[in-house]
Structures are given as structure tokens and as C-alpha cells.
Length: 282
Length: 253
Image (cartoon, rainbow over all chains, first blue to last red; front, side, top):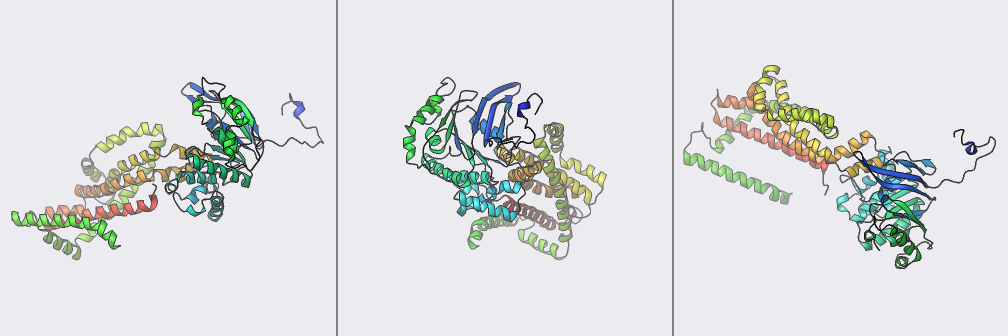
């Protein structure tokens, strides 16, 4: 460190015992999209921490920078200001310790399900045998073992999105980022997949940050809910969800009327000029 | 197998039978002499004879070699150029006006010049074939690479694909259906290119044989037999490419 901050230097002879770093640490994050000479700010002054093994939901209306936030943490975008740390290390680009699940499955149409799941392993230089073994294991985890040889167009929308989750888990990331992964699915299928996602989270022990439009979904899944509001998106509230786990789909209905739901709804409607509350599912 | 034959081959055979019957009818009703319009069975007999006495085969091989080399070189350069056109605005601005101008110049007018410069041997035919194949394949590659899904490219970036991996595992496979569209057109054009090159000056080849049959030999049945061979060559090349395409591209939904 610089000479102006001597307090941060470790005195010789003492062992330094820092608090264990958060899985995700976001500090003073600003980002804007540039088109020509104009910049449109997408997120402003975002700061939050996600502890190891936590499942955190990000909720907010359209245009509050939820997807932008995930792409920033995933290293696909570079912040204009502020910093992002994953496991205490600054994010400088796409990295193996972060797995990304996009809103669309984004599978390669010319590859089988197995080969799609193995894609990150192939890019990382794994041998063919190791790839197949690992991908088969992942397909088992997401319940797609019996469609390993099918092409994406032969799968249902839900199967494709599960394949995309398996792919994101391929390199055993410590943090899994999901951008509204089930938004294209019908409500019943979504409930089932949220249940499955909870199972995958328990089995892999990874930290999960999931973007959603749905308050019940956020409450059902998350330990914490981050509420983004306004344009550019700012953190309007951070709501802890203290429901016992494992949570069952039956509790979903109760979640809608809970105090947490009221808090989230209140935070979402802080800025009714910019964010249309109608864009958020009840 | 029998069902495939019935479904795919039967209609084709039926059309051929009708055409042959009409052709025969025309010869009989019109009473044309064989040097104007030979009857189908006369052409068939001449075709068999030309293969038996060694008139056809060496010429067929000569033309096939010209096509194969010219096509490979032309398509190879075209794929590289098409990729650069798609990914570099500078290359596109520098090259595209000249490419279009070159394409608009009829190859028929260029062929004698190319023969003048490069002789009447294999080289001039290869150059003409390569030139005629180049444009459709380059444009198809450019369009194909540009149409590769940006979301897939972003996915590749998220999983840390290197520049070479993006090219080989995302851009090339993504553009392949479009590239093959250009290659199909290019392959049939390559046949025309070889014949034009042989007309402009050459010692062997099916184009030379046409000139011989028409001019010095006055053998119209041989002219027809050569045309049939050229058409068969074109169809075979097209089917071979379609088979390769099916293997490489397959079903994508």
C-alpha cells in the first residue's frame, strides 16, 4: 500500500488475520452504456456483499440494470467506477471462478447437449475423456442424462435452460450468476425448476446470484433479496428472507403475503416515475 | 431403401422419360438429320462408344482436374477474404468495390486474355475456375460470418474462448450453412469456368471435345454426348458437396 495508509500495513512478526473475503463484493459500482459521445448510465453507486454459499436474488423493474450488474460481475463489462471482488480477488474479465447463465440458453445448435455442456471444458483444454466424464456428471445433476445425444432444437425450453446451467457449472465456479434463467418458461415449469435450482445449490455449495422479475420467486429462493430501483439502477433495499430451508413449493403462496414481500414491493415502488411497477410480476 | 428409391428417384426418372420421349418425337416428326438433332438412342450409342474408344475419358479427367484445383484455390481464398470482409471495415471498404467490379466483368471476355498470358495449359483454366468460384463463396462467407449470433459470441467470451477458439468453434461452424450455399453455386460455376477456359484455348478437356465435335469432326452426336457428360459431371459435383454439407452441417432445427 502507499505511504499514506500506514494503518493497512501489517507489522512485521504478526500474522495477519483478515476477515474471510465475501464471495462477491461490489463497491461504488458505476456503469453506463456509450453510444457515440453520449453515455446512458445503467447502474450507479451500487455497493453490496454476498457471503459464501449464499443464494441472493436481484429484483427490479426493466431498465434498473440487473442484467448489466451480472455482466459486470461476470467480467463481460468493465465498470466505469468502483470495484468488484469475487473471493477477495478483483474481477478483470471473464474468469473460471464465475459461471454465467444467460436469459437465453445460448446453446450451440450444431452440438449435442453433452458437447454443449462440455464446451467450457473444451475451451479450457480438457482431454476428450475427461470432458465426457465431467459433462455426463453435470447432465446427471440437472436431470438431462437421457438427452445427452440430442441437439438443442430437439429439447424443450426448460431442458435447454438446464443444459445452460450445467454448462455454467462445468468448471466448478465458486459463484454462479443467473440472469432470469426461467423467464421464458410457463409458471408451472418455473416452480419446478426453482425447486431444482435450490437442490443444485445445496449439492454444489456454490454462491448464487439470480436476477428475477418475480417477488415470490425471489422469496422462495433467496437468503437475501437485493432490490434495484430507478434509472440508473440503485440499491433501494436489501431484504433478508428468514424462512427455514429446504423450502417447498407449497410455501410459495405464503411468500406472496409475507412481510418480506411487502418490504420488497415498497422498495420497488420508491420511484414510480421511472420504474413501472406493472413490469414486476405480483 | 426401396422406399427411398420410390420417393426420391421415381419422380426424377419420370421427368427424364418424358423429356426423352418428347425428344424422340421431335426427331421423328421433324425428320431432322443426325447432324442437326440426333435421336436420344443415337446419342446414347455415341456416348458409350466415346467412353469405349477412349475419346471421352482423358478429356473428362482433364476437365475434372482443372475444376478440382481451380475450385479449391478459388474457394479457399474466398473463405479467407469473406471472413476479413465480415470482420474488418477497412478490408470491406478497400476491397468490395473492386470485387463487385471484377464480378460484373464477364469471365467470357477475360478468358482469352488469361489464356494469352498464362498459356493454353492447366494454369489458365485453374485461374479462370478460381475467379468464377471466388465471388459467390466470398459473399456467402461474409454474410454467414456476419450472421453468427452475437449472443453465442458473448457466451464464448464468458467462457474465455481465445481468438482462435472463437474463429474455429463459433464463427466457422456458425457460418458453415451459408458458406456451403456459396460453395454449391461455386461448384456448378467451376464447371462452366473450365469449359470457357478450354474454349479460349486448350489441348484437352470436355470443352475442347465440344469444339472438335462441332467444328472439325462435324459429329453432332458426339457433341450431345459431351454435353451429357458435362451435365453429369456438374450434378455429381453438386451431390458430392451436398453430401459433405450434410455431414458437416447436419440438422440444426
